[in-house]
Image (cartoon, rainbow, N blue to C red; front, side):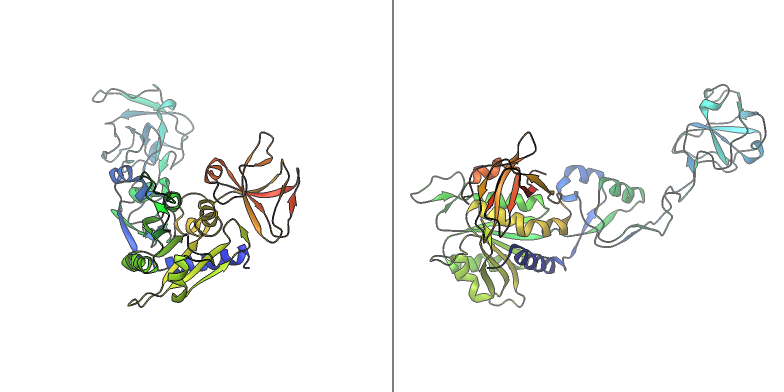
Length: 418
Protein backbone atom coordinates (compact mmCIF):
# COMPACT_ATOMS: atom_id res chain seq x y z
CA UNK A 1 0.00 0.00 0.00
CA UNK A 2 1.00 3.59 -0.60
CA UNK A 3 1.20 5.90 2.37
CA UNK A 4 -1.05 8.91 2.73
CA UNK A 5 2.00 11.15 2.43
CA UNK A 6 3.16 9.50 -0.80
CA UNK A 7 -0.23 9.82 -2.43
CA UNK A 8 -0.67 13.43 -1.28
CA UNK A 9 2.74 14.31 -2.71
CA UNK A 10 1.85 12.81 -6.08
CA UNK A 11 -1.58 14.49 -6.19
CA UNK A 12 0.01 17.86 -5.39
CA UNK A 13 2.64 17.43 -8.09
CA UNK A 14 0.01 16.48 -10.68
CA UNK A 15 -2.30 19.37 -9.80
CA UNK A 16 0.43 22.01 -9.60
CA UNK A 17 1.69 20.98 -13.02
CA UNK A 18 -1.84 20.99 -14.42
CA UNK A 19 -2.48 24.52 -13.17
CA UNK A 20 0.93 26.00 -13.96
CA UNK A 21 0.03 27.33 -17.40
CA UNK A 22 -3.39 28.78 -16.72
CA UNK A 23 -3.97 31.80 -18.96
CA UNK A 24 -4.72 35.15 -17.32
CA UNK A 25 -8.15 36.67 -17.07
CA UNK A 26 -8.77 40.43 -17.19
CA UNK A 27 -10.94 41.96 -14.47
CA UNK A 28 -12.19 45.52 -14.61
CA UNK A 29 -11.51 47.65 -11.56
CA UNK A 30 -15.11 48.64 -10.98
CA UNK A 31 -16.72 48.95 -7.51
CA UNK A 32 -20.13 48.11 -8.99
CA UNK A 33 -18.78 44.81 -10.38
CA UNK A 34 -16.99 44.03 -7.11
CA UNK A 35 -20.33 44.39 -5.37
CA UNK A 36 -22.41 42.61 -8.02
CA UNK A 37 -20.02 39.68 -8.58
CA UNK A 38 -18.27 39.12 -5.23
CA UNK A 39 -17.30 35.50 -5.91
CA UNK A 40 -15.69 36.42 -9.21
CA UNK A 41 -13.52 39.06 -7.54
CA UNK A 42 -12.84 37.53 -4.12
CA UNK A 43 -9.16 36.75 -3.39
CA UNK A 44 -8.00 36.67 -6.99
CA UNK A 45 -4.30 36.11 -7.68
CA UNK A 46 -2.38 38.58 -9.84
CA UNK A 47 -0.89 37.11 -13.00
CA UNK A 48 1.65 39.93 -13.48
CA UNK A 49 3.19 42.68 -11.35
CA UNK A 50 1.43 46.03 -11.20
CA UNK A 51 3.37 49.30 -11.36
CA UNK A 52 2.00 52.59 -10.06
CA UNK A 53 1.30 54.95 -12.99
CA UNK A 54 1.08 57.94 -10.63
CA UNK A 55 2.24 59.03 -7.20
CA UNK A 56 0.03 58.11 -4.26
CA UNK A 57 -1.10 60.50 -3.06
CA UNK A 58 -0.87 62.30 -6.42
CA UNK A 59 -0.34 65.71 -4.78
CA UNK A 60 0.60 67.11 -1.39
CA UNK A 61 -2.57 67.32 0.68
CA UNK A 62 -3.72 68.22 4.14
CA UNK A 63 -3.83 65.58 6.83
CA UNK A 64 -6.12 67.71 9.02
CA UNK A 65 -8.83 70.33 8.92
CA UNK A 66 -6.78 73.44 9.67
CA UNK A 67 -4.95 76.43 8.24
CA UNK A 68 -2.29 76.22 5.54
CA UNK A 69 0.67 78.49 6.34
CA UNK A 70 3.89 79.49 4.58
CA UNK A 71 7.51 79.23 5.68
CA UNK A 72 7.84 82.99 6.26
CA UNK A 73 5.23 82.84 9.04
CA UNK A 74 6.73 79.84 10.87
CA UNK A 75 9.73 79.36 13.13
CA UNK A 76 9.05 82.23 15.51
CA UNK A 77 8.91 81.90 19.27
CA UNK A 78 5.40 83.29 19.61
CA UNK A 79 2.07 83.21 17.81
CA UNK A 80 1.46 84.89 14.46
CA UNK A 81 -1.54 87.00 13.47
CA UNK A 82 -2.51 86.24 9.85
CA UNK A 83 -5.14 87.35 7.35
CA UNK A 84 -7.58 84.53 6.47
CA UNK A 85 -7.97 83.98 2.71
CA UNK A 86 -10.41 81.85 0.73
CA UNK A 87 -10.88 78.28 2.03
CA UNK A 88 -9.69 75.22 0.12
CA UNK A 89 -12.15 72.29 0.29
CA UNK A 90 -11.22 68.78 -0.82
CA UNK A 91 -11.39 68.46 -4.59
CA UNK A 92 -10.36 72.05 -5.31
CA UNK A 93 -7.05 73.87 -5.59
CA UNK A 94 -6.33 77.26 -4.07
CA UNK A 95 -4.16 80.12 -5.34
CA UNK A 96 -0.58 80.60 -4.24
CA UNK A 97 -0.42 81.44 -0.52
CA UNK A 98 1.21 84.77 0.22
CA UNK A 99 3.24 85.64 3.33
CA UNK A 100 1.08 86.97 6.16
CA UNK A 101 -1.94 84.90 5.14
CA UNK A 102 -3.47 81.56 6.13
CA UNK A 103 -5.88 79.48 4.08
CA UNK A 104 -8.57 77.34 5.76
CA UNK A 105 -7.97 73.85 4.33
CA UNK A 106 -9.94 70.66 4.65
CA UNK A 107 -8.60 67.13 5.09
CA UNK A 108 -7.46 65.77 1.70
CA UNK A 109 -7.43 69.16 -0.03
CA UNK A 110 -4.33 70.09 -2.06
CA UNK A 111 -1.81 72.16 -0.10
CA UNK A 112 -1.46 75.40 -2.08
CA UNK A 113 1.80 76.59 -3.56
CA UNK A 114 3.62 78.68 -0.98
CA UNK A 115 2.31 76.69 1.99
CA UNK A 116 4.61 74.31 3.87
CA UNK A 117 2.55 73.20 6.88
CA UNK A 118 -0.98 72.86 8.23
CA UNK A 119 -1.94 74.03 11.71
CA UNK A 120 -5.02 72.16 13.07
CA UNK A 121 -8.06 74.37 13.56
CA UNK A 122 -8.16 73.34 17.24
CA UNK A 123 -4.88 75.23 17.80
CA UNK A 124 -6.16 78.44 16.23
CA UNK A 125 -7.66 81.53 17.90
CA UNK A 126 -10.52 81.52 17.34
CA UNK A 127 -10.69 77.70 17.07
CA UNK A 128 -13.11 77.80 14.16
CA UNK A 129 -13.22 78.66 10.49
CA UNK A 130 -14.69 82.06 9.61
CA UNK A 131 -17.66 82.27 7.29
CA UNK A 132 -16.46 82.20 3.67
CA UNK A 133 -16.35 85.65 2.09
CA UNK A 134 -15.99 87.51 5.37
CA UNK A 135 -12.90 89.48 6.37
CA UNK A 136 -11.19 87.68 9.20
CA UNK A 137 -7.89 87.16 10.93
CA UNK A 138 -6.56 84.16 12.84
CA UNK A 139 -3.84 83.74 15.45
CA UNK A 140 -1.75 80.59 14.98
CA UNK A 141 1.21 79.19 16.92
CA UNK A 142 4.37 79.85 14.96
CA UNK A 143 6.21 76.71 16.06
CA UNK A 144 4.93 74.32 13.37
CA UNK A 145 7.76 72.70 11.42
CA UNK A 146 7.65 72.53 7.62
CA UNK A 147 5.78 69.38 6.57
CA UNK A 148 3.57 69.29 9.67
CA UNK A 149 0.25 67.59 8.83
CA UNK A 150 1.09 67.56 5.12
CA UNK A 151 0.92 64.31 3.20
CA UNK A 152 3.66 64.57 0.59
CA UNK A 153 3.03 63.45 -2.99
CA UNK A 154 4.21 59.86 -3.40
CA UNK A 155 4.55 59.33 0.37
CA UNK A 156 2.44 56.14 0.10
CA UNK A 157 3.66 54.88 -3.30
CA UNK A 158 5.96 56.63 -5.77
CA UNK A 159 5.11 56.61 -9.48
CA UNK A 160 6.78 53.65 -11.19
CA UNK A 161 7.08 51.62 -7.98
CA UNK A 162 5.61 48.11 -7.84
CA UNK A 163 2.14 48.21 -6.31
CA UNK A 164 1.73 44.43 -6.09
CA UNK A 165 3.96 41.59 -7.26
CA UNK A 166 2.75 38.72 -9.45
CA UNK A 167 1.16 36.08 -7.23
CA UNK A 168 -0.28 38.65 -4.82
CA UNK A 169 -3.75 37.83 -3.51
CA UNK A 170 -6.10 40.76 -4.06
CA UNK A 171 -7.60 41.52 -0.66
CA UNK A 172 -10.00 44.44 -0.09
CA UNK A 173 -7.14 46.81 0.82
CA UNK A 174 -5.16 45.78 -2.27
CA UNK A 175 -8.17 46.38 -4.50
CA UNK A 176 -8.29 49.82 -2.92
CA UNK A 177 -4.63 50.48 -3.81
CA UNK A 178 -5.26 49.36 -7.39
CA UNK A 179 -8.26 51.70 -7.65
CA UNK A 180 -6.37 54.60 -6.04
CA UNK A 181 -3.61 54.21 -8.63
CA UNK A 182 -6.18 54.71 -11.38
CA UNK A 183 -5.78 51.31 -13.04
CA UNK A 184 -8.80 50.36 -15.15
CA UNK A 185 -8.16 46.61 -15.19
CA UNK A 186 -5.87 43.90 -13.83
CA UNK A 187 -4.75 40.50 -15.07
CA UNK A 188 -5.45 37.65 -12.64
CA UNK A 189 -4.90 33.93 -12.93
CA UNK A 190 -7.94 32.18 -14.32
CA UNK A 191 -9.61 30.03 -11.70
CA UNK A 192 -8.97 26.29 -12.04
CA UNK A 193 -11.61 24.46 -14.07
CA UNK A 194 -12.52 20.98 -12.88
CA UNK A 195 -14.78 18.37 -14.44
CA UNK A 196 -16.44 16.45 -11.61
CA UNK A 197 -17.94 13.11 -12.64
CA UNK A 198 -20.05 10.92 -10.35
CA UNK A 199 -20.21 7.36 -11.63
CA UNK A 200 -22.51 4.44 -10.95
CA UNK A 201 -25.59 2.75 -12.35
CA UNK A 202 -27.22 3.21 -8.96
CA UNK A 203 -27.08 7.01 -8.91
CA UNK A 204 -30.21 9.12 -9.35
CA UNK A 205 -30.73 12.86 -9.63
CA UNK A 206 -31.42 14.51 -6.25
CA UNK A 207 -35.16 15.17 -6.03
CA UNK A 208 -36.11 12.36 -8.40
CA UNK A 209 -38.07 9.26 -7.43
CA UNK A 210 -35.83 6.31 -6.55
CA UNK A 211 -36.15 3.11 -8.54
CA UNK A 212 -35.38 -0.13 -6.70
CA UNK A 213 -31.67 -0.37 -5.91
CA UNK A 214 -30.87 3.29 -6.64
CA UNK A 215 -29.69 6.12 -4.41
CA UNK A 216 -29.50 9.86 -4.86
CA UNK A 217 -26.12 11.22 -5.93
CA UNK A 218 -24.60 12.86 -2.84
CA UNK A 219 -21.06 13.07 -4.21
CA UNK A 220 -21.93 15.48 -6.98
CA UNK A 221 -23.44 17.97 -4.53
CA UNK A 222 -20.88 17.62 -1.74
CA UNK A 223 -17.77 17.75 -3.93
CA UNK A 224 -19.13 20.54 -6.13
CA UNK A 225 -19.60 22.58 -2.95
CA UNK A 226 -16.16 21.57 -1.63
CA UNK A 227 -14.45 22.56 -4.88
CA UNK A 228 -16.35 25.84 -5.00
CA UNK A 229 -15.17 26.65 -1.47
CA UNK A 230 -11.57 26.67 -2.71
CA UNK A 231 -12.21 28.88 -5.72
CA UNK A 232 -12.68 26.26 -8.43
CA UNK A 233 -15.05 26.52 -11.39
CA UNK A 234 -16.81 23.15 -11.53
CA UNK A 235 -18.57 21.31 -14.35
CA UNK A 236 -20.63 18.41 -12.95
CA UNK A 237 -21.61 15.26 -14.84
CA UNK A 238 -23.10 11.88 -13.88
CA UNK A 239 -22.31 8.65 -15.76
CA UNK A 240 -23.61 5.11 -15.34
CA UNK A 241 -21.40 2.00 -15.41
CA UNK A 242 -20.46 2.46 -19.06
CA UNK A 243 -16.75 2.94 -19.77
CA UNK A 244 -17.32 4.30 -23.27
CA UNK A 245 -19.86 6.83 -22.01
CA UNK A 246 -17.41 7.97 -19.33
CA UNK A 247 -14.63 8.48 -21.85
CA UNK A 248 -17.01 10.41 -24.12
CA UNK A 249 -18.03 12.73 -21.28
CA UNK A 250 -14.40 13.43 -20.41
CA UNK A 251 -13.39 13.91 -24.04
CA UNK A 252 -16.23 16.40 -24.60
CA UNK A 253 -14.97 18.59 -21.74
CA UNK A 254 -11.22 18.04 -22.18
CA UNK A 255 -10.46 21.30 -23.97
CA UNK A 256 -12.23 23.38 -21.32
CA UNK A 257 -10.94 21.92 -18.03
CA UNK A 258 -7.61 21.68 -16.21
CA UNK A 259 -8.40 18.60 -14.13
CA UNK A 260 -10.89 15.73 -13.96
CA UNK A 261 -12.12 14.41 -10.61
CA UNK A 262 -14.20 11.25 -10.49
CA UNK A 263 -15.99 9.37 -7.74
CA UNK A 264 -16.75 5.67 -7.69
CA UNK A 265 -15.57 2.76 -9.80
CA UNK A 266 -11.97 2.58 -8.54
CA UNK A 267 -11.83 -0.69 -6.57
CA UNK A 268 -10.67 -4.11 -7.74
CA UNK A 269 -14.11 -5.70 -8.16
CA UNK A 270 -16.46 -5.98 -11.13
CA UNK A 271 -18.30 -3.00 -12.64
CA UNK A 272 -15.49 -0.60 -11.74
CA UNK A 273 -16.26 1.83 -14.55
CA UNK A 274 -13.53 4.39 -13.87
CA UNK A 275 -10.84 1.75 -13.60
CA UNK A 276 -12.16 -0.03 -16.70
CA UNK A 277 -12.13 3.21 -18.71
CA UNK A 278 -8.94 4.84 -17.45
CA UNK A 279 -6.48 2.11 -16.52
CA UNK A 280 -5.64 1.27 -20.12
CA UNK A 281 -5.14 5.00 -20.79
CA UNK A 282 -2.24 5.50 -18.34
CA UNK A 283 -4.11 6.25 -15.09
CA UNK A 284 -2.69 4.27 -12.16
CA UNK A 285 -4.98 2.72 -9.54
CA UNK A 286 -3.67 1.67 -6.14
CA UNK A 287 -4.52 1.27 -2.48
CA UNK A 288 -3.56 3.93 0.03
CA UNK A 289 -3.12 2.92 3.66
CA UNK A 290 -6.07 5.08 4.71
CA UNK A 291 -9.54 4.43 6.10
CA UNK A 292 -11.90 5.52 4.66
CA UNK A 293 -10.68 6.21 1.14
CA UNK A 294 -8.22 3.40 0.45
CA UNK A 295 -8.82 2.84 -3.30
CA UNK A 296 -7.46 5.78 -5.31
CA UNK A 297 -6.57 6.62 -8.91
CA UNK A 298 -4.18 9.17 -10.28
CA UNK A 299 -2.48 10.06 -13.53
CA UNK A 300 -2.68 11.62 -16.97
CA UNK A 301 -5.46 10.25 -19.12
CA UNK A 302 -4.54 9.73 -22.77
CA UNK A 303 -7.55 10.32 -24.98
CA UNK A 304 -7.89 9.37 -28.64
CA UNK A 305 -7.15 12.29 -30.95
CA UNK A 306 -5.78 14.48 -28.18
CA UNK A 307 -2.05 15.24 -28.05
CA UNK A 308 -1.97 16.28 -24.39
CA UNK A 309 -2.95 13.90 -21.61
CA UNK A 310 -5.56 15.16 -19.16
CA UNK A 311 -4.77 15.14 -15.40
CA UNK A 312 -7.16 12.91 -13.48
CA UNK A 313 -7.76 12.28 -9.76
CA UNK A 314 -10.08 9.40 -8.92
CA UNK A 315 -11.80 9.00 -5.54
CA UNK A 316 -13.88 6.14 -4.13
CA UNK A 317 -17.65 6.32 -4.39
CA UNK A 318 -18.77 6.09 -0.78
CA UNK A 319 -19.74 9.65 0.21
CA UNK A 320 -17.53 9.93 3.30
CA UNK A 321 -14.62 8.28 1.46
CA UNK A 322 -14.93 10.85 -1.32
CA UNK A 323 -15.04 13.83 1.05
CA UNK A 324 -12.21 12.55 3.24
CA UNK A 325 -10.12 11.91 0.11
CA UNK A 326 -10.77 15.48 -1.01
CA UNK A 327 -9.68 16.84 2.39
CA UNK A 328 -6.57 14.67 2.57
CA UNK A 329 -5.31 14.96 -1.00
CA UNK A 330 -6.94 17.64 -3.15
CA UNK A 331 -8.12 20.50 -0.96
CA UNK A 332 -4.67 21.55 0.33
CA UNK A 333 -3.12 21.99 -3.11
CA UNK A 334 -6.18 23.66 -4.65
CA UNK A 335 -6.51 26.06 -1.73
CA UNK A 336 -2.84 26.98 -2.04
CA UNK A 337 -3.18 27.56 -5.80
CA UNK A 338 -6.31 29.71 -5.63
CA UNK A 339 -5.86 31.39 -2.21
CA UNK A 340 -9.63 31.00 -1.80
CA UNK A 341 -10.87 29.82 1.56
CA UNK A 342 -8.45 29.24 4.41
CA UNK A 343 -6.02 26.38 5.05
CA UNK A 344 -7.34 23.81 7.48
CA UNK A 345 -6.12 24.42 11.02
CA UNK A 346 -4.31 21.46 12.58
CA UNK A 347 -3.47 20.96 16.24
CA UNK A 348 -3.25 18.29 18.93
CA UNK A 349 -6.07 17.63 21.38
CA UNK A 350 -6.71 14.94 24.03
CA UNK A 351 -9.16 12.12 23.44
CA UNK A 352 -12.27 11.93 25.60
CA UNK A 353 -12.94 8.28 24.77
CA UNK A 354 -11.24 5.07 23.74
CA UNK A 355 -11.37 3.57 20.25
CA UNK A 356 -9.70 0.91 18.15
CA UNK A 357 -7.96 1.63 14.85
CA UNK A 358 -6.62 -0.68 12.12
CA UNK A 359 -2.90 -0.78 12.85
CA UNK A 360 -1.85 -0.84 9.19
CA UNK A 361 -3.93 2.14 8.09
CA UNK A 362 -4.15 5.86 8.74
CA UNK A 363 -7.70 6.19 10.01
CA UNK A 364 -9.57 9.46 9.66
CA UNK A 365 -12.52 9.61 12.03
CA UNK A 366 -15.07 12.38 12.35
CA UNK A 367 -15.30 14.20 15.66
CA UNK A 368 -16.06 17.27 17.73
CA UNK A 369 -14.55 18.95 20.78
CA UNK A 370 -16.53 18.68 24.01
CA UNK A 371 -16.84 21.51 26.53
CA UNK A 372 -13.49 20.52 28.05
CA UNK A 373 -11.65 20.69 24.71
CA UNK A 374 -11.43 16.90 24.37
CA UNK A 375 -12.13 14.95 21.19
CA UNK A 376 -15.29 12.86 20.91
CA UNK A 377 -16.14 10.85 17.82
CA UNK A 378 -19.26 11.61 15.81
CA UNK A 379 -20.68 8.41 14.37
CA UNK A 380 -18.66 5.31 13.57
CA UNK A 381 -15.86 4.75 11.05
CA UNK A 382 -18.21 3.63 8.27
CA UNK A 383 -17.74 5.35 4.92
CA UNK A 384 -21.49 5.68 4.30
CA UNK A 385 -22.23 7.75 7.44
CA UNK A 386 -22.54 11.07 5.63
CA UNK A 387 -24.87 12.67 8.19
CA UNK A 388 -22.30 12.00 10.92
CA UNK A 389 -19.64 13.63 8.75
CA UNK A 390 -21.94 16.62 8.28
CA UNK A 391 -22.38 16.93 12.06
CA UNK A 392 -18.61 16.76 12.71
CA UNK A 393 -16.32 19.74 13.00
CA UNK A 394 -13.04 17.79 13.02
CA UNK A 395 -11.14 15.11 11.16
CA UNK A 396 -9.36 13.00 13.77
CA UNK A 397 -6.08 11.41 12.64
CA UNK A 398 -5.21 7.95 13.96
CA UNK A 399 -1.94 7.14 12.16
CA UNK A 400 -0.47 3.90 10.88
CA UNK A 401 0.94 1.81 13.71
CA UNK A 402 -1.71 2.84 16.23
CA UNK A 403 -4.16 0.11 17.20
CA UNK A 404 -5.99 1.91 19.99
CA UNK A 405 -6.41 5.31 21.60
CA UNK A 406 -7.28 5.85 25.24
CA UNK A 407 -8.86 8.81 27.02
CA UNK A 408 -6.22 11.50 27.43
CA UNK A 409 -4.12 10.40 24.45
CA UNK A 410 -3.13 13.31 22.21
CA UNK A 411 -4.28 13.09 18.59
CA UNK A 412 -3.92 15.41 15.59
CA UNK A 413 -7.15 17.01 14.41
CA UNK A 414 -8.06 19.12 11.39
CA UNK A 415 -10.81 21.71 11.58
CA UNK A 416 -13.61 21.09 9.07
CA UNK A 417 -15.65 24.20 9.87
CA UNK A 418 -13.19 27.04 9.20
